[in-house]
Length: 206
Image (cartoon, rainbow, N blue to C red; front, side):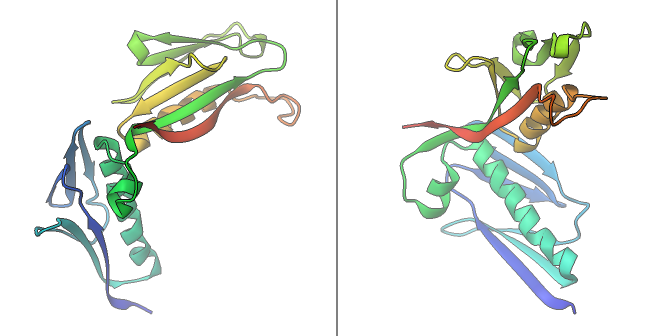
């Protein structure tokens, strides 16, 4: 069964400017600018000006999977707003807290049983070198995607921190690091060595 019309709305905060042209979404805020192309999704996306600017998403004559794209694009825009603004999503939606956030943070931990994994940050946080994984001589190089920086944690041993405005680039960079340290030709229930995501959050300051 197809619905004639399904819509979703998203309120835009005051300190964020958003523009839409041919389903090319541009969001600008205190932390920078993000651009996403969603032309592969067939839907109406309108920016409605008023006391509180909002984005209206609409799908006409859509099936179940087509209608599901509404929430997907809405969440994508919400993540873009979170990335470029200093206000947390809780503040933007509920206006119930004074906590401020800055972009997205992924924390990763190096796990090993015998051979210590050496993580070396290179190119001012734009790349990482992994040595001595399972005692192997091979050196693994992992580059970060655009807008993502990697640093070593000063509070926790064997922990690295990835930070950036674009949640897709941050999460994909973390996945590239974890994927480069996959255990092959061994029982993964016994050989648990690797670099794994331990926490997904935002930088919180008062």
